[in-house]
Image (cartoon, rainbow, N blue to C red; front, side, top):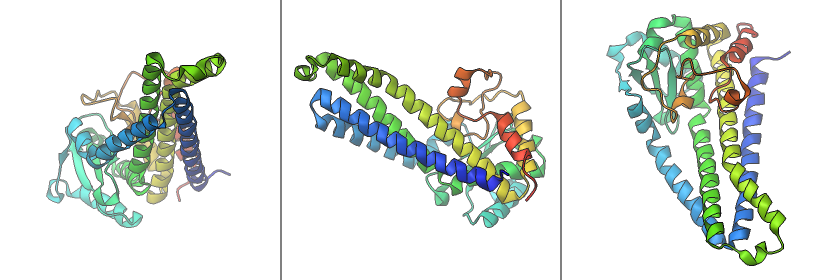
Length: 298
């Protein structure tokens, strides 16, 4: 019988399988592109550039995200009940107390960010505090603390680096191919060149799909571990139901930060079709709720 523990273990394994496959995919793509460009130096430069840009993002992404979402830091005196709730869960989880921010939006939602548990941030909307009861709010905060404890920000940074490498490599491949490339090898090797071109065209799409798949698996994992932290899966299930049914529009909703939230901040734009599911930043809320409500209180 499935339990929250088996769901968590399964999602951890799948995440690392995706990452391993992603690395192998990039190595293969890099070799093919370098072969046709006859220059491994270009490959090295592209990878160094991608890692440098992502390193900067890793250190400053939390400040950028908070600014985009107009989040304001609060102190203990500003909301004592929220601070105590977060403190109690942090003690249970063995995590340092993160900074707490409030987003002036009426849509109930929340996210966590920060480069590691010692520099973590939890941001919640005014709507979340107003529309959820204590057990539901506790479930949401536990979910976000699970993201922090699992160092999901690090995994997402790695994925962003890998996607960046793919995009830069394919862009260089197209430019150098049309500028000349290694024509001597292309003669009599048309089939291989066509395969390489097809791979270069589809690579950014595959990279994006892998990125989204990893993001969705991390949401399932955070749901499971958040429920384990509170010992009450129904609280988080009820919170997700309320959040998904709320029709409030989030003015600061942004494609670049949507994946951070516990639920997609875009309302009324999610149709139940295959294409939308493929490119969704979050797993279906109905599936998340079903998983949680299928578990007994622990």
